Image 1 (cartoon, one colour):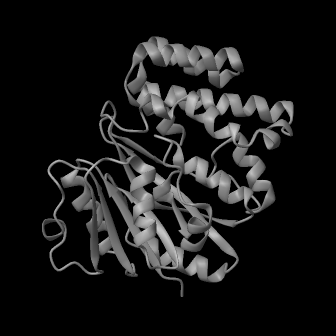
Image 2 (tube, one colour):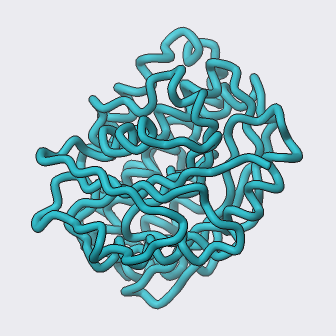
Image 3 (cartoon, one colour):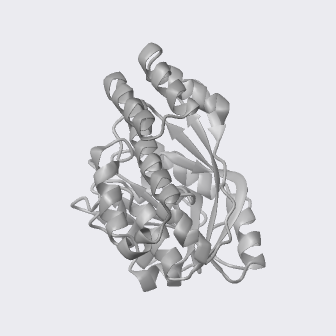
Length: 307
């Protein structure tokens, strides 16, 4: 059966990272190891305080200067010994059966180097939650083209990757302050690594609106998307006009989502208007009207209700 190392990255979230570690320690099938990368937290994390008598064994790596999400995860990858690496952010949690379910699927699909699954998103301040939906794909060449249009794989806590594939491609691009996961999925798909999808929500995201995070920052906006997609210029040129329009719509939708998570009503209205101008569908019209009349919290609740 495949072995899985779990890499948890953390920056200034001591309470949350302890909860994340407990979610890994409580797995029905133990991880090979837990590697916590402290990306220059102040005060520094302590292995004894994080997990006394931890099973599976826990290793703590400390960065005195912050290297960002890509640099922190790469440090964990280099330290990992498992055949596969699962990633977890300090404010998220694995459900108890995650590693067991992933191990069974990876054992069954020996050709796969990447497994991704659904997640449950809990909007803490709004009191609502929803499960993400996976888009079907062939796991091979067709996935690369689809990823150029839209990130249908998800974020790092929803993905388990073969360590050898990560080493071959050099891991995450440390020059990206955000969306480094999307960049890596594109490179893995382009290199021909096989993906397999699991529709079960095996990670829980606790999303706190208005709290600072990389996902809500300007680094996660259209400029970074453009930098990433520039690496794939020839493949992008082969997209149909409909695919290129959908790509622009997906970026605009991401920008609207960032505004909602920041509870920035003015920016949410502007982003919803930009989305409507790009493609004036009924859904875009409803998004703009809701942004103007009800504001970000109402939009978040309505989107969660739709699933």
